[in-house]
Amino acid sequence: MPVRLGSSTEATFAVNNRGVIVAWNAAAQRLLGYTPQQAIGAQCHDLMHGFKPSGAPMCTADCPVVQSCKYGTSARRFEMTVPRPDGLEVSVDVVTVTVYEDEEPIAIHVLNETPSARHLETMTQHVLERLGARGLPAAQAQAPSEALTARELTVLRLLAEGVRTEDIAQHLALSRSTVRNHVQNLIVKLGVHSRVEAVVAAIQRGLVQTP
Image (cartoon, rainbow, N blue to C red; front, side, top):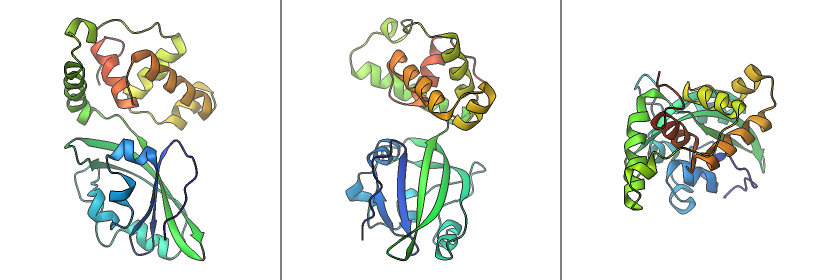
């Protein structure tokens, strides 16, 4: 039975204790490239094909998250890279927690995109191709962004270093919601669609340095 996730703006999906995806929100579709119709009902490891930062497979038939879900154990946190159906890869920080729906344990996965040096080059090429498809000349693609505040620049540089939202909040003594607001402002001002594209655009325009 499908599970309702509410109106979360973070990429979120749910897996039952048999490894079947039972919920998939719109943000998960935007991040991972699969529609709810493609995802719900599929075996999680068959759809995701995620792998660890080391390159070892993460999503397997004996997934430890599913095993934890069966016993309702505490939250897990891990990083992985997921191949998208369009051929790109997305690196994500994943937090899972087990909840109960009609007495059945359900593992809720919340994903946050994490820019990494390993795929910035690929994303840069993708952004350039997208701009070219829109008929934008290179000079326009490299045009200066709308003026960023000093705090937004600081957040942008931390994003480029792969620092997570909660760690940025702690480092700058801000709330997580304030950091998210800064990130959203960056996305709008830079004219992009995601955190990774914001970092790519910032590197192209010399606003940050690559690691």
